[in-house]
Image 1: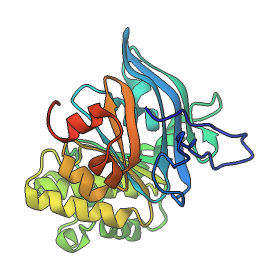
Image 2: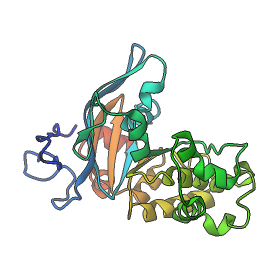
Image 3: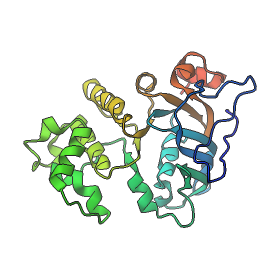
Length: 283
């Protein structure tokens, strides 16, 4: 596992990775982008079962960070902790800190609803609201949070354009969201998240239920989104992680085993467990 990260005083918003004994940066990039989010000593439980065992990990700004690892290793739990969704599960609890810029989102004065507006989430299974039109689905996040929009039509178009869906649905906005194909439904859910103008977008296995063509469209979209957003993607697909991610973190049994630049993780992993997983010897 990488050496622990250090959070500076709140006056300095850019925590940095400690260097390896040989002086190299753990991300193999001395000029790496600044850190947008930062999990420090993060632990999580489902009742008595500990799912995360002290995760310390940076999420770099305007980059795609892939979380990989075998089933049950804590990947989804980790991303749900990043926007305080884990705590809504009965008997679930979290310890540790998660910084968004320099602010701990688990601080006593922090409103979790406000956190979820700044940190959007796209789930494994596309989940458009079946009784709502495409237009209403895009606006649903604002409605649920009691937010008003002065120019809803403009917001709908902008969100759908960002999700690379506008040209496909601009003439059928009143049609049900579930009338779309699986890949279109997933992009609709991305548009719904983007309508809230988040700073970070979390994607939990967004392509696992999609065919190769729809998957390629989502991956192209992820490349475009990192220009404006910080993206975290959970994936079982090693090829997908290699294609879309700038940085990759390998989880195993609730622990962070290795983190670094994606090219380095896949070509020259430092931990034998990482190499074994990437090469398909387990997982």
